[in-house]
Image (cartoon, helix red, strand yellow):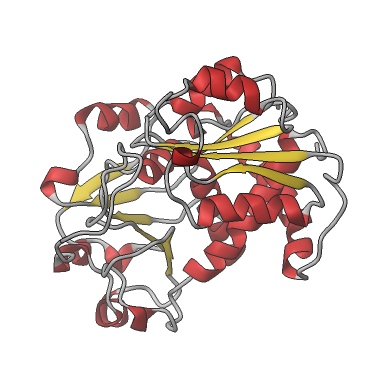
Length: 316
C-alpha cells in the first residue's frame, strides 16, 4: 500500500480498497480525541492553510477543528473576494498556491472551478486536499460518509445504497468512484435533467459499479440499507457565490419524509445527508431512528483529523 505522507487527496478514483480501510483505521484511533472534546499535540508543529473560494460551513470548519484537535495551527481565507485571487487582480491558482505553500504544511482548497485543486497540486510542494471543486468531486465528504456507515453498520460490503438528489453534484461523483472498491449495489434517483451524465455512467460501468436508476424513491427505499440524500434545489456550483433568491420546492419523488420511512424503509436503515438541506428531509425526521446526519457531521471532524495526520506523516 502506498504511503499517505506528502500525498494529495484530490479524487477517490486514486484510492485502492486497502487505502480506504487504512484511513478508517486511523480515524478510529483518533476519534476519542474529538469525542472527548480535547486537543492533542500530534500536529503541534504544523499549520493548515484553508483556501476557500466558495462558501462553506462544515467542510472548512471541520478541517479547521480537526487541525486544532491535533494541536496544530490554522491560517487562510474563507472568502476569495478578500484576497488578490478574488479582486481586480484575479491572481492565478499557480501564483496563489506558490505563496500559500510557504504559509503552512498542508492546504485544503474549495473552488468553483472543476479541477482547481488538481491544478494547485501541480505547483504546490505541500499536500493539497480537495474540499470540493465545482461539479467535480468531494472526496473528504464521501470518506466521512463511508466511515459513518462502517461505524454504524459494522461493515460496508454487502450493503445496498440509495442515492437521491442531483447526480451532477460532486458528492455523487465521489460516491460512485468509492463504491467501485466495495460490494455495494447503488440505486440513483434524480430529476430527469439532473440524472447521471452518459460519460459518468460509462465510467461507473468501466469501474464495475453495480448501479441502476429509478424515477421515485418509493421504488427503491424498501431495499436500501444506506440512504444518501442531496438537494435537488441548490445553487450553481460553478459560481463563486450566489445570493439567496427565489427557488422551488423539492418534488415528492425526491423527498425522504417520516411517513415514507415509517411505511417503506428498513427499520435498521441509516439516513445520511452532507448538509445543508432544503426541504428534501423535513425536520421531523431528525429525531427518528434512521437519521445519522448529525453523527455524520461529527465524523467529518474525525475523518479530516485522519487525513491531515496521514498526509503530514504523523500517522502511518
